[in-house]
Structures are given as structure tokens and as C-alpha cells.
Length: 109
Image (cartoon, rainbow, N blue to C red):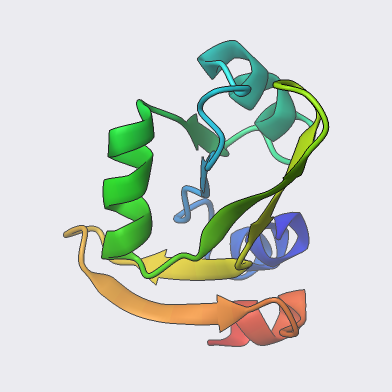
């Protein structure tokens, strides 16, 4: 949520580093992930990895994803959960925000 980051920046400064992790390493190269992230906010760190690494991180954060109907090897959708996590500077989980929370609600937490 770009707006949540902007609200936090306005309130206490640029203390948040948003991170986006692709769940589709077959299609999303590091360059594509960077381009995608840059469309939203200049500080978003875009990450991808091997299918095994993506599986490990998705399990660690309890993220659901599943490849849906596949028309071709490059034409498919992936069903996935949409959750924003707040992780402290020490790398430990602090809180999470569901997709129904507004940017203001996220910033206020």
C-alpha cells in the first residue's frame, strides 16, 4: 500500500522499507519485479527466488498460493492470499494487515 507508506513518511519520516515478494518465479525475473515495484513506490524492495525459496518464504509467512487454470506455459493465473506484514528491524514479525484495511488504518497501527 503506497499510501500507507506515504502517511507514515509524513508522520515520522522514511522509516519503512516496503518489500514485495513474487510468488511466480517462473514468470517474474528480478528485472520484472523491480519494474513492477517501481510503479508503486521508489523504496519498495522487490524479491524473487527459486521455486523452492518462494515455497519456503510463503510457508514461513503462511501465504497461500496456487497455480490456477493454465492455458499455456505463459498464460495462467495464480490464486494467492493478499496480506501485508509489518516486520521489525530485527526481522521478527510484528503485525499483519489484511486487504480490507485502509492505508490510514495501517499507518495508524
